[in-house]
Length: 91
Image 1 (tube, helix red, strand yellow):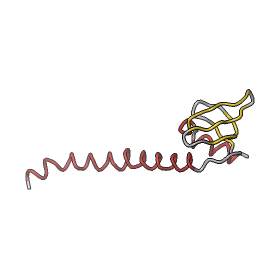
Image 2 (cartoon, rainbow, N blue to C red):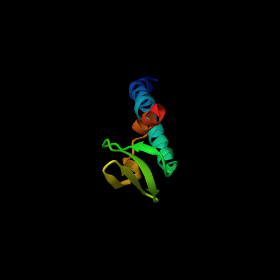
Image 3 (cartoon, helix red, strand yellow):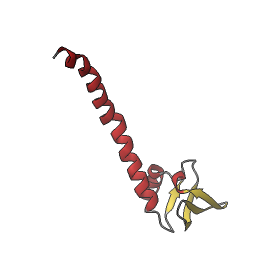
Image 4 (tube, rainbow, N blue to C red):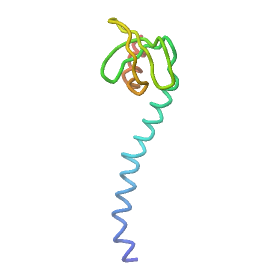
């Protein structure tokens, strides 16, 4: 029983870290992956670097967006889930 009480704080710390850091990060990554795979031509998006545009072409790992200054080819992972969601709520 004495040895178990020595490891209890470490076990508790791991549980707290898991539920407050690891699990939310896994959930966020899953949501971003679903968002990236659910993109379709015509969607309005904002990239993580702040470019606003509309999807005009889709490939397996890349996307071409049309901005006011022309077309840009980006990785799908460069599109921000949170910023695009707020953009589409406003419209």
